[in-house]
Length: 368
Image 1: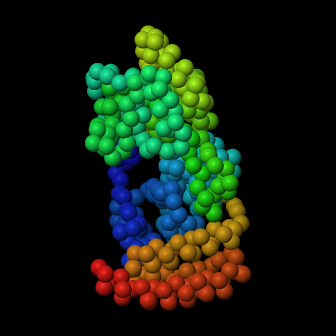
Image 2 (image 1 turned 90 degrees about the horizontal axis):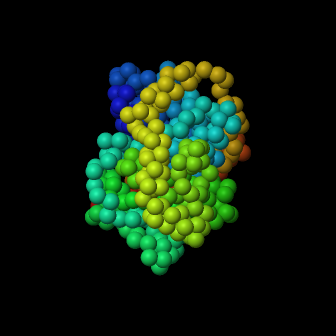
Image 3 (image 1 turned 30 degrees about the horizontal axis):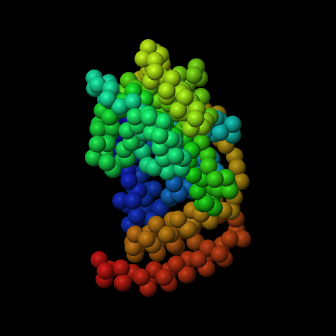
């Protein structure tokens, strides 16, 4: 996506776990300097080494951005980490508003919108309804209900031979009149997820904007973020299996209505296609994202503890002997923590982790 307007370099942190955080930051800074890099994006879709302290080690002459494809589970962590950045890209328009509400510069970034892949291939429409994805939550209940009501539903998963590449999937969408999108998603029991006591949330999926690029209509389970993208009701919704059935039957029984709805929906989806949208992304980055006051916050103790553990355990699991002990030293004795009362816990945790590492290291080398 970014290579359409930028010369890009990708660094996979997992390739450099033989380095401690300080040495890794130095390596990134050397790459920034040697390649004259002006913008750095950090992925925040999970807990990694990318916390405030690490981001502060990166060259402050570049613009730093947090890049979130899926912010739902980690939003309460990301909104703290983002304070060390100049802006936030997120794959959900509702998430954009959540960051803006706190004073961050944030912008919607559609993830799966490559028009060279998702496009009209001129395929014949041989399926009435297509569902692609994993079978979970309420998905099979609704698709089975549609089949019971004599709706021709084609189902496939990400590992089926008919749909295991983006190109195959795009052609399959081309062959379908309607694509079903489900938004009900599980809330995990992660301790960092304050919504874990609520069983489901209703989240935006990429299907809602790349289906239209393939000249097919998407019918989606309701999710509030979708209304922010399709603000003129270009995307048909349903909130129950009966409503889903009625919406689909209405379109399948009226070809002209289906064609008109598909055309209107496609025109809206084209606004988010990469070759067009990258211009908006570049304008956002260029429009002085460093201007304005920085977000000020008090770093909570749980945030510091989560990343203290993560930095050590990443090297522990990867069996990186040198960087494991170097990182323990950096994390325990060289890092300035706001929550001083946790330092005895950090020291105790480091000692226990070191003992287990020493015990497992020769065994893991023997197994390999």
